[in-house]
Image (cartoon, helix red, strand yellow):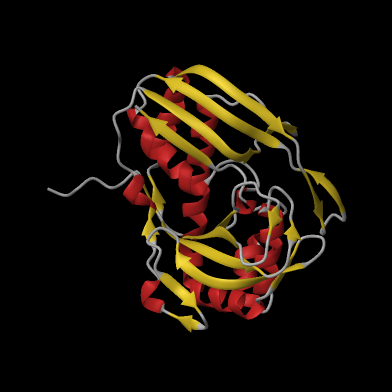
Length: 293
Protein backbone atom coordinates (compact mmCIF):
# COMPACT_ATOMS: atom_id res chain seq x y z
CA UNK A 1 0.00 0.00 0.00
CA UNK A 2 1.33 3.43 -0.92
CA UNK A 3 2.14 5.87 1.82
CA UNK A 4 -0.02 8.96 2.01
CA UNK A 5 1.52 12.13 0.58
CA UNK A 6 2.93 14.52 3.20
CA UNK A 7 0.98 17.64 4.13
CA UNK A 8 3.76 19.72 2.61
CA UNK A 9 7.05 19.13 0.86
CA UNK A 10 9.85 21.60 0.07
CA UNK A 11 13.62 21.44 0.25
CA UNK A 12 15.58 24.02 2.20
CA UNK A 13 19.23 24.47 3.09
CA UNK A 14 20.08 26.00 6.48
CA UNK A 15 23.48 27.68 6.68
CA UNK A 16 25.33 28.88 9.77
CA UNK A 17 27.68 31.75 8.86
CA UNK A 18 30.33 32.65 11.41
CA UNK A 19 32.17 35.96 11.43
CA UNK A 20 35.05 37.00 13.68
CA UNK A 21 35.14 40.51 15.08
CA UNK A 22 38.42 42.24 14.19
CA UNK A 23 38.02 45.50 16.12
CA UNK A 24 35.77 46.75 18.95
CA UNK A 25 32.28 47.24 17.55
CA UNK A 26 28.90 48.48 18.72
CA UNK A 27 26.05 47.23 16.56
CA UNK A 28 22.26 47.68 16.56
CA UNK A 29 20.37 45.36 18.94
CA UNK A 30 18.47 43.67 16.08
CA UNK A 31 20.86 42.78 13.25
CA UNK A 32 18.38 41.47 10.66
CA UNK A 33 18.39 44.57 8.47
CA UNK A 34 22.16 45.03 8.66
CA UNK A 35 22.92 41.39 7.81
CA UNK A 36 20.39 41.52 4.97
CA UNK A 37 22.37 44.44 3.55
CA UNK A 38 25.69 42.61 3.98
CA UNK A 39 24.45 39.51 2.14
CA UNK A 40 22.84 41.59 -0.61
CA UNK A 41 26.02 43.63 -1.10
CA UNK A 42 28.10 40.44 -1.47
CA UNK A 43 25.67 38.83 -3.93
CA UNK A 44 25.58 41.87 -6.21
CA UNK A 45 28.83 40.63 -7.73
CA UNK A 46 26.85 37.81 -9.38
CA UNK A 47 23.80 39.34 -11.12
CA UNK A 48 21.98 36.03 -11.70
CA UNK A 49 22.17 34.95 -8.05
CA UNK A 50 21.33 38.43 -6.78
CA UNK A 51 18.33 38.74 -9.09
CA UNK A 52 16.92 35.34 -8.10
CA UNK A 53 17.19 35.94 -4.37
CA UNK A 54 16.65 39.70 -4.06
CA UNK A 55 14.71 40.95 -7.08
CA UNK A 56 11.54 38.90 -7.00
CA UNK A 57 9.32 41.91 -7.63
CA UNK A 58 11.01 42.56 -10.96
CA UNK A 59 11.10 38.87 -11.90
CA UNK A 60 7.43 38.49 -11.03
CA UNK A 61 6.44 41.42 -13.22
CA UNK A 62 3.96 42.76 -10.68
CA UNK A 63 3.68 45.66 -8.31
CA UNK A 64 3.13 43.50 -5.21
CA UNK A 65 5.95 42.09 -3.12
CA UNK A 66 6.69 38.46 -3.94
CA UNK A 67 7.82 36.10 -1.21
CA UNK A 68 11.61 35.71 -1.16
CA UNK A 69 13.43 32.34 -1.28
CA UNK A 70 15.66 32.90 1.73
CA UNK A 71 15.54 33.81 5.42
CA UNK A 72 18.21 35.55 7.48
CA UNK A 73 18.26 34.58 11.15
CA UNK A 74 20.22 37.17 13.17
CA UNK A 75 21.83 36.29 16.49
CA UNK A 76 19.98 37.04 19.70
CA UNK A 77 20.11 40.66 20.85
CA UNK A 78 23.67 41.78 21.49
CA UNK A 79 25.27 45.14 20.76
CA UNK A 80 28.93 45.02 21.82
CA UNK A 81 31.55 42.81 20.14
CA UNK A 82 35.24 42.62 21.00
CA UNK A 83 38.13 41.44 18.80
CA UNK A 84 38.16 37.65 18.51
CA UNK A 85 34.50 37.23 19.42
CA UNK A 86 32.16 35.47 17.01
CA UNK A 87 29.06 36.84 15.34
CA UNK A 88 27.05 33.90 13.99
CA UNK A 89 23.88 34.13 11.94
CA UNK A 90 21.69 31.83 9.88
CA UNK A 91 20.85 31.99 6.20
CA UNK A 92 18.20 29.57 4.94
CA UNK A 93 17.82 28.99 1.20
CA UNK A 94 14.33 27.84 0.25
CA UNK A 95 13.24 25.57 -2.60
CA UNK A 96 14.96 26.19 -5.93
CA UNK A 97 17.22 28.81 -4.33
CA UNK A 98 19.29 25.88 -3.00
CA UNK A 99 20.72 25.58 -6.52
CA UNK A 100 22.60 28.84 -5.91
CA UNK A 101 24.43 27.59 -2.81
CA UNK A 102 27.95 27.51 -4.26
CA UNK A 103 27.79 31.00 -5.73
CA UNK A 104 26.25 32.35 -2.48
CA UNK A 105 29.05 30.92 -0.35
CA UNK A 106 31.86 31.89 -2.71
CA UNK A 107 30.50 35.43 -3.02
CA UNK A 108 30.33 35.78 0.77
CA UNK A 109 33.90 34.50 1.04
CA UNK A 110 35.08 36.94 -1.62
CA UNK A 111 33.42 39.89 0.13
CA UNK A 112 35.16 39.28 3.49
CA UNK A 113 36.04 41.21 5.58
CA UNK A 114 32.64 42.83 6.01
CA UNK A 115 32.19 46.34 7.38
CA UNK A 116 29.34 46.34 9.88
CA UNK A 117 27.46 49.04 11.74
CA UNK A 118 27.48 52.82 11.45
CA UNK A 119 31.22 52.87 12.20
CA UNK A 120 31.90 50.12 9.60
CA UNK A 121 33.85 47.82 11.87
CA UNK A 122 35.64 44.84 10.34
CA UNK A 123 34.29 41.28 10.66
CA UNK A 124 36.00 38.42 8.78
CA UNK A 125 34.31 35.27 7.51
CA UNK A 126 35.53 32.23 9.47
CA UNK A 127 33.42 29.46 7.97
CA UNK A 128 30.04 28.42 6.60
CA UNK A 129 28.39 25.31 8.08
CA UNK A 130 25.34 23.26 7.21
CA UNK A 131 23.10 24.73 9.88
CA UNK A 132 21.47 21.54 11.20
CA UNK A 133 24.29 19.02 10.75
CA UNK A 134 27.17 21.44 11.44
CA UNK A 135 29.37 20.09 8.64
CA UNK A 136 31.78 22.63 7.18
CA UNK A 137 30.81 23.75 3.67
CA UNK A 138 33.50 26.45 3.44
CA UNK A 139 36.48 27.12 5.69
CA UNK A 140 39.90 28.71 5.13
CA UNK A 141 39.30 29.05 1.41
CA UNK A 142 38.21 25.44 0.92
CA UNK A 143 34.80 24.52 -0.53
CA UNK A 144 33.33 21.10 0.34
CA UNK A 145 30.37 20.35 -1.89
CA UNK A 146 29.78 17.00 -0.16
CA UNK A 147 28.78 18.87 3.01
CA UNK A 148 25.92 20.57 1.14
CA UNK A 149 22.94 18.55 2.34
CA UNK A 150 19.49 20.02 1.83
CA UNK A 151 16.73 19.25 4.33
CA UNK A 152 13.06 18.69 3.50
CA UNK A 153 10.15 20.38 5.20
CA UNK A 154 8.21 17.11 4.92
CA UNK A 155 10.33 15.73 7.79
CA UNK A 156 8.28 18.03 10.05
CA UNK A 157 4.90 17.14 8.55
CA UNK A 158 4.03 14.49 11.16
CA UNK A 159 1.52 14.97 13.96
CA UNK A 160 2.47 15.09 17.61
CA UNK A 161 -0.10 14.45 20.30
CA UNK A 162 -0.67 17.72 22.16
CA UNK A 163 -3.38 19.36 24.25
CA UNK A 164 -1.33 22.39 25.31
CA UNK A 165 1.32 24.52 23.65
CA UNK A 166 3.35 27.63 24.30
CA UNK A 167 4.34 29.80 21.33
CA UNK A 168 7.27 32.13 21.99
CA UNK A 169 7.80 34.97 19.50
CA UNK A 170 11.58 35.33 19.54
CA UNK A 171 11.90 38.09 16.91
CA UNK A 172 9.36 40.84 16.16
CA UNK A 173 6.21 39.47 14.51
CA UNK A 174 4.82 41.90 11.94
CA UNK A 175 1.34 41.15 10.62
CA UNK A 176 -0.65 44.00 9.13
CA UNK A 177 -4.37 44.28 8.42
CA UNK A 178 -5.85 47.33 6.81
CA UNK A 179 -2.46 49.03 6.99
CA UNK A 180 -2.23 48.65 10.79
CA UNK A 181 0.02 46.35 12.81
CA UNK A 182 -1.91 43.48 14.40
CA UNK A 183 -1.16 43.53 18.13
CA UNK A 184 -3.61 40.83 19.23
CA UNK A 185 -2.33 37.49 17.96
CA UNK A 186 -4.66 34.50 18.25
CA UNK A 187 -4.21 30.89 17.16
CA UNK A 188 -6.11 31.40 13.92
CA UNK A 189 -3.75 34.22 12.94
CA UNK A 190 -0.71 31.97 13.39
CA UNK A 191 -2.20 29.06 11.43
CA UNK A 192 -3.46 31.25 8.58
CA UNK A 193 -0.04 32.89 8.31
CA UNK A 194 1.95 29.66 8.04
CA UNK A 195 -0.44 27.88 5.67
CA UNK A 196 -0.44 30.90 3.35
CA UNK A 197 3.35 31.14 3.53
CA UNK A 198 3.85 27.49 2.60
CA UNK A 199 1.37 27.82 -0.26
CA UNK A 200 3.12 30.84 -1.76
CA UNK A 201 6.64 29.42 -1.30
CA UNK A 202 5.88 26.04 -2.86
CA UNK A 203 3.96 27.61 -5.73
CA UNK A 204 6.92 29.78 -6.70
CA UNK A 205 10.01 27.82 -5.64
CA UNK A 206 9.02 24.16 -5.90
CA UNK A 207 7.43 21.64 -3.59
CA UNK A 208 3.84 20.88 -2.73
CA UNK A 209 1.18 21.46 -0.10
CA UNK A 210 -2.14 19.77 0.58
CA UNK A 211 -4.39 22.79 0.10
CA UNK A 212 -7.48 20.98 1.36
CA UNK A 213 -5.70 20.09 4.60
CA UNK A 214 -4.44 23.68 4.89
CA UNK A 215 -7.98 25.03 4.48
CA UNK A 216 -9.28 22.51 7.04
CA UNK A 217 -6.83 23.51 9.78
CA UNK A 218 -7.58 27.19 9.13
CA UNK A 219 -11.28 26.46 9.71
CA UNK A 220 -10.61 24.48 12.90
CA UNK A 221 -8.08 26.90 14.38
CA UNK A 222 -10.83 28.94 16.06
CA UNK A 223 -11.60 25.90 18.26
CA UNK A 224 -8.25 26.26 20.05
CA UNK A 225 -8.47 28.32 23.24
CA UNK A 226 -5.99 30.99 24.26
CA UNK A 227 -5.08 30.52 27.93
CA UNK A 228 -2.72 33.45 28.30
CA UNK A 229 -1.02 36.16 26.28
CA UNK A 230 2.09 38.03 27.36
CA UNK A 231 2.88 40.01 24.24
CA UNK A 232 4.36 43.47 24.05
CA UNK A 233 5.11 45.88 21.23
CA UNK A 234 8.80 46.03 20.38
CA UNK A 235 9.37 49.42 18.76
CA UNK A 236 12.00 49.46 16.07
CA UNK A 237 12.93 51.59 13.07
CA UNK A 238 15.31 51.03 10.19
CA UNK A 239 16.63 53.28 7.46
CA UNK A 240 15.42 52.25 4.02
CA UNK A 241 17.91 53.09 1.29
CA UNK A 242 15.24 52.47 -1.32
CA UNK A 243 12.77 54.90 0.29
CA UNK A 244 15.54 57.14 1.69
CA UNK A 245 13.75 57.48 5.01
CA UNK A 246 13.32 55.80 8.38
CA UNK A 247 10.55 53.20 8.34
CA UNK A 248 8.62 51.72 11.26
CA UNK A 249 9.63 48.13 11.85
CA UNK A 250 7.85 47.52 15.13
CA UNK A 251 6.49 44.07 15.91
CA UNK A 252 5.16 41.85 18.67
CA UNK A 253 7.35 39.87 21.06
CA UNK A 254 6.46 37.56 23.94
CA UNK A 255 4.63 34.31 24.61
CA UNK A 256 1.19 32.84 24.03
CA UNK A 257 -0.32 29.72 25.61
CA UNK A 258 -3.06 27.66 23.93
CA UNK A 259 -5.17 24.63 24.87
CA UNK A 260 -7.30 22.26 22.83
CA UNK A 261 -6.94 19.39 20.40
CA UNK A 262 -3.67 20.58 18.91
CA UNK A 263 -2.46 17.42 17.15
CA UNK A 264 -3.73 18.44 13.66
CA UNK A 265 -1.87 21.76 13.97
CA UNK A 266 1.53 20.53 15.16
CA UNK A 267 2.97 19.96 11.63
CA UNK A 268 2.13 23.54 10.65
CA UNK A 269 3.59 24.94 13.87
CA UNK A 270 6.77 22.94 13.29
CA UNK A 271 6.99 24.39 9.78
CA UNK A 272 6.51 27.89 11.21
CA UNK A 273 9.59 27.39 13.40
CA UNK A 274 11.65 26.99 10.23
CA UNK A 275 9.93 29.37 7.81
CA UNK A 276 8.89 32.20 10.20
CA UNK A 277 5.57 34.01 9.71
CA UNK A 278 4.42 37.56 9.00
CA UNK A 279 6.15 40.36 7.11
CA UNK A 280 9.90 40.88 6.69
CA UNK A 281 10.75 37.25 7.44
CA UNK A 282 13.74 37.57 5.09
CA UNK A 283 15.23 39.98 7.65
CA UNK A 284 14.62 37.51 10.48
CA UNK A 285 11.26 38.80 11.73
CA UNK A 286 8.50 36.40 12.76
CA UNK A 287 10.68 33.66 14.24
CA UNK A 288 9.00 31.50 16.86
CA UNK A 289 9.60 28.54 19.17
CA UNK A 290 6.91 26.07 20.20
CA UNK A 291 6.67 23.76 23.22
CA UNK A 292 3.97 21.04 23.42
CA UNK A 293 2.56 18.81 26.09
